[in-house]
Image (cartoon, rainbow, N blue to C red; front, side, top):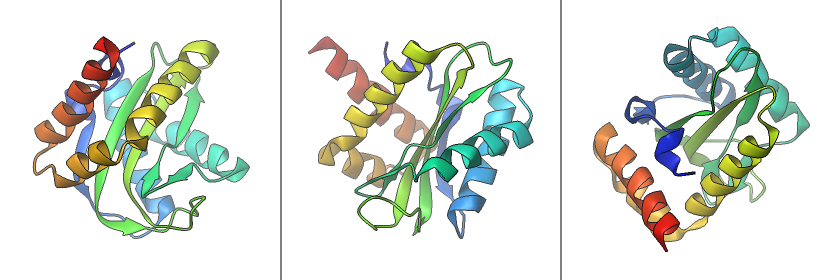
Length: 155
């Protein structure tokens, strides 16, 4: 499964302005709603419910909020680069500036876990994070994520 299978080009969001984790998740829920036809409130609630279990801030300025959405037909991702980092209660206590939202159908447990693992592996690499942080257009942000994930899949 390549990243572009669940990250559409319009799922790349550059310079998202948010003052806190809650605002970032709400804004990304709105963007996800436009991609999925699921209600933004439902997406926001699923993401916030997951955050209640423990922060999805995985460290190194990265968060991977995720949730399962009733009625969603397939896994959908969004990748956002924030205009300035926000506190995400990350495991390393560092603020987050790269957020990858992953939404899955209720019954897609194995596929959801595979997608999470793929995103996590990709964003664990310092050169990928730095390239994403250097992206100046949404198209570049998408291309870096999709191309890097594709080259990993071929390796």
